[in-house]
Image 1 (cartoon, one colour):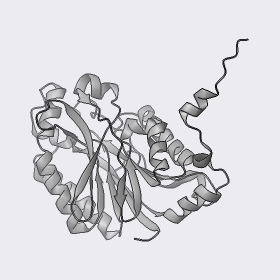
Image 2 (tube, rainbow, N blue to C red):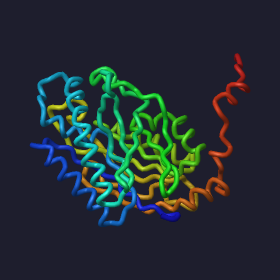
Image 3 (cartoon, rainbow, N blue to C red):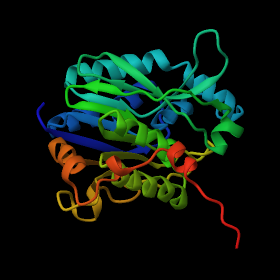
Length: 296
């Protein structure tokens, strides 16, 4: 693929649907739109799959609906794997609640598909209050680094991007791209994710691809409203886009954000940038070892 990577980040409009086929049509249309624009990496947002809850019993407690949604895993994987293979794209397929065999816990999981149709996954590591308290979602425990034809990539799912040690660990493993699928219900929540994503791009000298849900499903708690704006964010230095924003959508509209990433520019910035925050950073242990407490 060389040193350039064209990325498409979806502002996905969630809405009630009548069948799984309707969900598949919406997703398929977006995949082929991305392929028409010759993108190589397509990113869907966190929990875009909650559309499928509207096919079930919305009067159930929300934690039971999340478990019903987890049972659609095989159909979802078949759909996304086939689309990645047919379109020849890498696809970060947002997230889906999943359950492991023999385990009654539910996890929020992002599946990453290669153009071959093969896939791996990254689990969400930190739960928001509504995930933990209402949906009863459990955290995963391991950050993964994905090897691709365009280099190394990591995934920080929504709230995870607010924890700087995750992106820093990925950057230290030579990840040039961090993908942040997100789902936020109002502007303050969105801005927490957005500002942190921008900070991760600056402090780690990496691209951050943010993908957001928009639209609403009024009868499903936590996604009854959505505030979102997908963006492709960069370090803040001369070699990159003004304001550190390579591309961004119009807030709360259904659309796709597309941009070309120059991976060689990232490598050069880590060696010869105006500042070198990744190289110059200390570990938490190093800071604590030299910390002083001063009484005044």
